[in-house]
Amino acid sequence: QLQASGGGLVQAGDSLRLSCAASGGAFSNYAMAWFRQAPGKEREFVAVVSSSGGTYYGGSVKGRFTISRDNAKNTVYLQMNFLKLEDTAVYFCARGIAGSIMTASRGYNYWGQGTQVTVSS
Figure 1 (cartoon, helix red, strand yellow):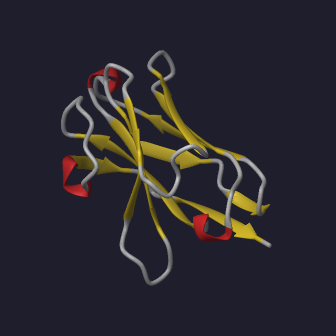
Figure 2 (cartoon, helix red, strand yellow; figure 1 turned 60 degrees about the vertical axis):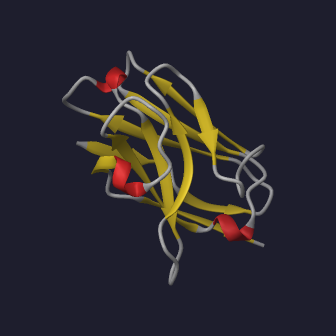
Figure 3 (tube, one colour; figure 1 turned 180 degrees about the vertical axis):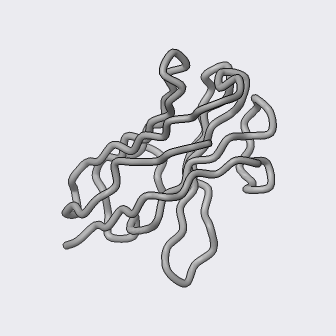
């Protein structure tokens, strides 16, 4: 089970940190990722951290967002800086089917409930 939190309403240029707490299973064995979905759009890959700590980012967030994990706390984080209006979406955390980096949603079999991030001008 995945529980995402930390969303909210912020202004463009602000920062926000999302958290996703996992329960059950061997958290450290799996890749963890963040996806997002804006109204009327398809779900979009945001970032992933592998079981070994490697990271990969979607092009629209690279350089602004940082994904990290704390295996002792079974938690994955998404630090979002320099937020833009187009970052507005529901953000979902997901657990991979394996430990390697994957960007397609079919590579994830557990999903959190989503947390809303709204960026205003």
